Every structure is written in structure tokens, then in C-alpha cells.
Amino acid sequence: MKRRCLSPLAAVAFSALFFGPDPALAQGYLGPSLRPFAVLGGSTVTNTGLSVVTGDLGVSPGSAVTGFPPGIVTGTIHAADATAAAGQTDLTAAFTTLTSQACGLDLTGTDLGGLTLTPGVYCFSTSAQLTGTLTLNAQGNPNAVWVFRIGSTLTTASGSSVVFINGSNANACGAEWQVGSSATLGTTTNFAGNILAQASITLNNNANLIGRALARTGAVTLDDNNVSFAACGAGGGAGGAPPPFPAPVPTLPEIGAWALLVLLLGSGAYVVRRRASTEASR
Image: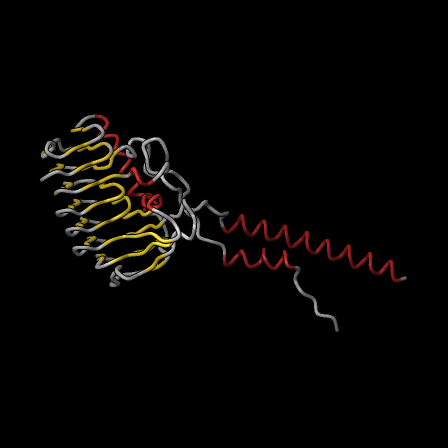
């Protein structure tokens, strides 16, 4: 008795019903009014020492910016003006976009130090801690994206770092840190990515950030730091969108329709071949 099997195309179509990737929003999610900011606070931006901010610095709805000088801002300072307000509007939208990303792996209770993570969405229901080195493996993709959804605080121990393998610092703005309350970078931390915090962001003495420090309601506090998205490449600058999230895939009903079409085509091709074989054997 002959076994009847699905054609390879039909098998692939059938498996797509169950193993297709989750949909994700494909967009330059930071928005044009937010991308020029390396630092954006909600209440105040304060600085101690010789911090250097490469990009714009802003605050809204608060208006206080202190410590510049001696701190240096290579771009423009926007204090409670329309530009800063528009940046906050885009920040709210970006924060919501990160919230909508489906969790790929729950790391609650796991220290990020010592981990090597490929692109994906990682979640903490409460706080997240980095002690030591977090390695992000870009797998050779210049547009790799890591999303970290953190329920409450993000804290790094002194001397911690975020490094990239199979990529470069150009991947830095592909690391997106959504923080449910406040973020604190310990002294001499070398951090990477866009930090989007609901409340405040504090960079302790000599902590450096390749990316952006963006606080919705609270303060951004600096102390002899360097904050810059310039190393992020074309995607991180004011003129271009950051690396996109994975492109959306068809929803389940659409996949089902395509799978049915492929199955029908495969079945039709099989019937035609059988008829042709039967005619040839007569």
C-alpha cells in the first residue's frame, strides 16, 4: 500500500499555522521629535562636573536645567519649549510601543550580568539588575533589536557594562530599555541603548551611555558622564530612524488562507502528475 504524504510546500504551509513568528510593530518608533534628544527629562535635568551630552538636551513640562556649564551640550538645550514638549509626546508613544511587544523570555529574578542574549524581547515583572557584563549577540545583523521590558527599576552595579559581539557599537541604539519606574547606572558603568523610563534616570559618577536617557515624568541626573547616540550609526542619529522591530507577519486568518491556497495548489499539482503518469502507462 502506497503512503500518501503532504507535499513539502503543503507541509510548510501547515506548520506556519503553528510556528509563525509573533507579529511585531515595524516602525522607527522613537519618532522624529524625539530622535534628536540624547537627554530628555520630565521635571528637571541636573548635572555635576564635566558631563558631555552629544545631541540635544531637553526638559518638559518642567523647565529647570542646571549644571550646563560646566557640562557641555553639543546640540541645543530645550527647556519647557515646544520642541521639548513634542519630544515628550513622541516619548509617550515610544513607551507605549515597547509595552505592546510580546514577551519572548521572562528573566524575572535573573541578573543580566554574565548573560549572552540574541535579539528578542526580554521581560522582568519587577526590577532588573546588571552586575558585571551583559553580552548582546547581534548575529551579524546591523539592525538587530533587543527589547527589555522592566516592570519597576533598572539598576547596574559599579563597573558593569553592555557589550556587543558579532556586531559593533552601531548596534547600541537597537537595545531598547523600557523601565517602569526609574533607572540608575552605577559608577563607571558603560551602558548601551535607549533608556525610556517612566520616572527618573540617574547616571552616577563616570557612568557612560551610548544611546539616550529619556525620562517621562522625573529628572535626569548626570555626574561627570558621557551620553551620546553618535556611535549608533545612521540609525541612531537625528536624521534617521533607529533599527526597526521585526516586520509584521500575516495574522492567523491570513496565514490560514494562504496555507489553504498552497494546499489546494499542491493537491492540484499532485492530481495532474498522477493523471499524466496513468496516461503514459496505458
